[in-house]
Image (cartoon, rainbow, N blue to C red):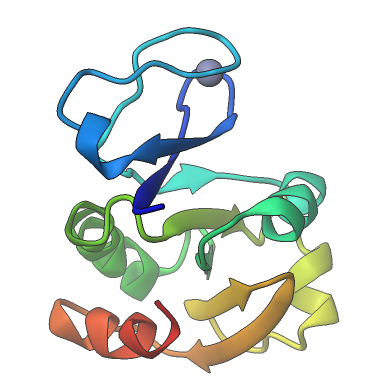
Length: 144
Ligand SMILES: [Zn+2]
């Protein structure tokens, strides 16, 4: 029952990998490509985000950002590292609010970056402002 969740970077498929097989170069059940295990943040639009949070078996941290936002760019590498630390236990999605404003508007996001966490199809956490390093763990750990 102890399994890890990985999103296939090639096709977007959500894969459940038994913990005992994580070190055996697991492949995607949908497209058969080798799964990347670094749990890298990935870009979604509003429709893809809705599909993702509806079906993800693990919490999804969503970074609402924009290209012109300097604090957003500062947070980005910290999200990459967070993904590595929490690989298998959560996913990290990024929404460029300049191109995809719909979900951010629905959540009344007024400042970016805003970080939100979906769990079981619902938003369980939403906070505006940049967070770095272990501040990100403090945000997500209660929901893992
Ligand atoms: Zn795939």
